[in-house]
Length: 474
Image 1 (cartoon, rainbow, N blue to C red):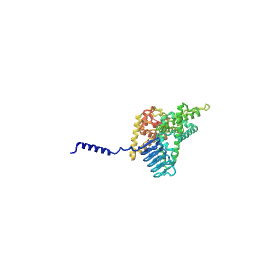
Image 2 (image 1 turned 60 degrees about the horizontal axis):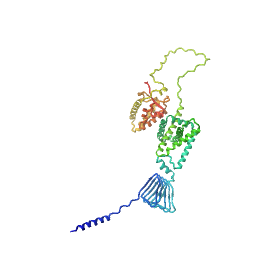
Image 3 (image 1 turned 180 degrees about the vertical axis):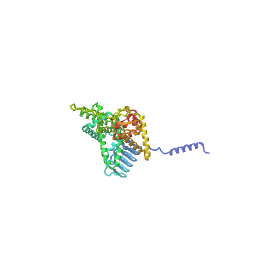
Image 4 (image 1 turned 120 degrees about the vertical axis):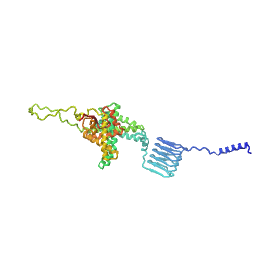
């Protein structure tokens, strides 16, 4: 029999041999490095697995066991540095010192490569495109971060200075249009913003429709040129408006005071444009407001060219005292027309002062119109829903131009008139119809705006300068 002591000794020897055969603990593998918006330096004597830098530069003095990718920055590969895999630089240059090695391919996109004599990577050396090193920091640290102005890029401030010079020139040459834009901003800033938003929404579809037709294709460049000029004109007005509010100046001040207001407003507008995210929101809002101010000024100019109709009857001038009095005419055998009663409809010029239509009345009239257009749409056998929207807008524009109301409006006793009391023209009806799209796509907020406004005006009423009133029967 095996003695107990011998058995215990064997167990311990077996356990000790098993422990001796266990593998050593694994050595930590080199880390992977990823940086966004900042520079990175790999010191000499250190190694990493992979290196990815976005929006920054890299100084490689150690060893990269895998690939190194740098986007929007430059690469400095020191003599002690090496990249065993591929080295890819997008939007930046690379400077390679003597003694540095690249085991794979070296790809440079939009940048230059400064290599020592006799340097060749293990794979291929590929260069793509002209150098765009100055644009990549603007894209990565500017547009991608939502700020149009990157403070540490000098060429961006050069563009800002050129834009300021253009603003000063417009302010000097086009004083009256700029003043009209400022008046529009002061009177109705919300309406001006909504009109600008409508211009932005319709600019793309209008360009596509013009481009589809052969004749309208030549109009597209002029359309966009007009939009650019309008944006600059409105930008001058917005800058003067903001600067005037800060300085508490008025448009009656001299040219020097107006230029000072423009400079102060331009500087105040540039401040939020340097802040990430807030810069993009501010630029979009101010651009829409600038386009709206120019559009309101243009529409007001067109309306001035359409004078109000001269009334048919007016006071008769007294005859000169030197003339002989006319002989009395015999009484007419025809009966005279009775005077108009209070139940008859008032003249068109008085409708603007009539009671505003309620939200329920307008909603009921609209539902009746939708039902009627739906029946017509069904008889026309059209499949796509967009044709229903186009038919609904065409129906309203046609009847507004013809009668100032629709079939639903007749039932609900509603009339659409301009706020100045004049009858709707075709252009007013088209603007109101297209603006109703904006009221609808904003989750219907433009229609529910009637409940908030004391004058019960929707967004498309404000844009078109119209109102909906309740009229007596007949």
